[in-house]
Amino acid sequence: MKVTVMKTVRSITALALVFGLFGCQPSFSVSLASGEETIPDVGFVVKDSEHPKSPRYNSVRVLDADGETIWRIRTEPSTNDMGVENFAYGDSLDGFTTVVEAEELVSGESYTLIVGGAGNGELHFDIDEDGVAVKSAN
Image 1 (cartoon, rainbow, N blue to C red):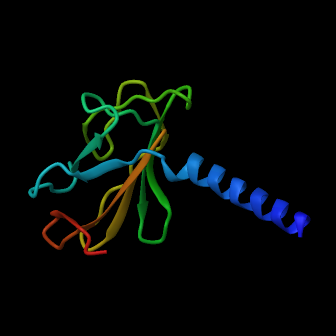
Image 2 (image 1 turned 135 degrees about the vertical axis):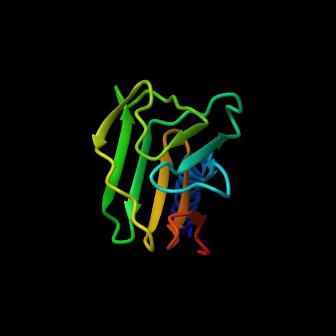
């Protein structure tokens, strides 16, 4: 009985540690800059609730519908958290290094923008047939 109680206590402690480390991770709100974003200059806005004046992230990545990275930038060194609230697809941001050059966004395709650092956030968006970026339904 005593061994069972100790195992249960260890399991609960381990779960509490996991949720404490990962469950409270801050998240970023990521959105299109406006309802009129068109290719090739699709703009985005990143809001960081813990740093409202200047979001702190160290990586920006865009994936295509197949999950392939079509643009990626990160801070140098990668442990620095910095960022700007507004940027456009393919921008060179101060303090960031381009890891994967931006490929052309294509009408009729779906994409995912992922912003990461101490927290994380993502935006699923589509480029419609007119070249306008719209938030995906999913």
